[in-house]
Length: 380
Image (cartoon, rainbow, N blue to C red; front, side):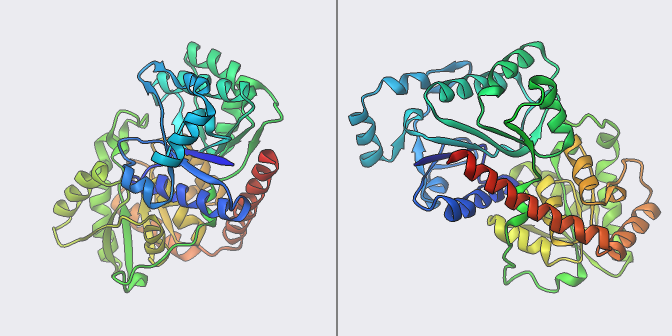
C-alpha cells in the first residue's frame, strides 16, 4: 500500500510534528506501507528523503491540474519511475492522509478548494481513499467553494473535523453524513524529546510568537495594534515573577522577525531558540514552567502535557481548543493590561492540574487513539 501524507512540511514545526505523528501511527497500523510526500517550498527533496519518502510527481500549476493523465501512463513505466527514480504518480497512490491542519476556508484562497474537490473526486473514481485527519475547516461562504465542496466531500472516505466549529462548517455543506466525524488534534499522542542544551526549564517561560497575529488572515483586528506590546509586556511580567523569559521560534523565517523585535524591545538579553527538530520543540515546551503562545501546535503541545499556557487567537481553532482543554480563561485579549497578564499567568500556573483539566488531557488522548482506530477501519 502506498500512502501520501498531504499538507505537511519541514519549516512550520506544527506541520512537521503532524508528519511525525502520522509516521508513528503508520508504523503501528501499516508497517509495510510506503510513504509519499509531494514537493513544496517548505519541503525540500533532502527533507523528504530523510523520512524515507518517495517523491510525488505532481503535474499541477495554478489552476492547471493534469494529474488525471497519470492514470494513462502504462503500469510498466510507472513502476520504472518508482524503482529507478523514486517517483510516484497519483495513479500509484492508494490512500491520501490530509494533515493540512488549517488550509481550507475563507481565510485562504479559493483555488486550493477547487483543486481539492477535483482531487477527491478523481481518487474516488479510481477506488482510492481520501481521508481528512483532524484539522480546522471553514468558514465556507464563497459560492464557488460551497458548490465544489458539496459535490466532492461526500466522496471523501473520512472527514475528521478538529472541533465543533469545523464540524458545523462541514455539516452545513453535506448534512449528517456518515463520513463526517469529530476528533481532536492528534499530535497530543507524540512524546517530545528534551535536548541537552535546554536546562533549568522549571524556571523558564517560553514566548512563542506567530506572524499571522499581525497579518491579513487575522480577523481580530485589535491584535494588529497591540500584539508586539503585549508580548514585550509578557517579558517584563515573567521577570517580575522571578522567572526567565525565552523566545521559541516555531515557524522559521516567518516568525523570526517578530522574535527579533521582541528580543530587542525586551532588553536584548533574551535567549532565542530556533530548533529544527519538532520532537525537541515539543520536549522544550514540556520541560518549561509555562508558555505564552500564538502557535496552535505550540498551544496543543503545552495543554496536552499539562504545561500552563496563555494563548492568543487569530482563528476559531484557538477558542475551541482552549474550551476543550477547560482553559478558556487562558486565552488572552488584545487589550489585556500588564497586571491582568501577570495575574493570568499566575492563575494558569496554580490551576494547571485542576481535576477537570487533567481529565480533559486524558480524554483527548483517548479520542486521538480512537481516531486512528477509525482511520484503520476505513482504510481496511
